[in-house]
Amino acid sequence: QVHLVESGGGLVQAGGSLRLSCAASGRSSYAMGWFRQAPGKEREFVAAINWSGGITNYADSVKGRFTISRDNKNTVYLQMNSLKPEDTAAYYCAARSRTIATMSREYDYWGQGTQVTVSA
Image (tube, rainbow, N blue to C red; front, top):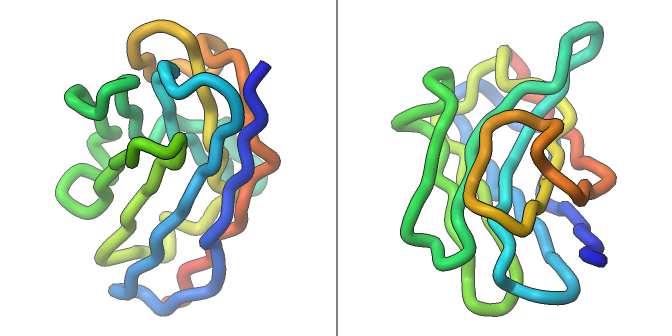
């Protein structure tokens, strides 16, 4: 069982930055992903990282602006730069015990989410 807790969301102006954190309990050998869901829209993939941190994957919409990373203490980060109003959403951290994936249904564990709001 893995327990995930996100933090770091908030309100920021367009062009600004935020860093989200996801603290995971239990084993560290999980691939981790970030997803987001805006009101009235489906949950969408943002970024993922494998258990060692050596493999990452990003949605086209965030490439070059967002960076996913992890430390050796079971925490995963999402550095978000050059934020746009369309990045406004609830952001969720997820974990799976296999290699990275981009589909939400492939993840076994989820955090409660943290809200990111980008004003124009």
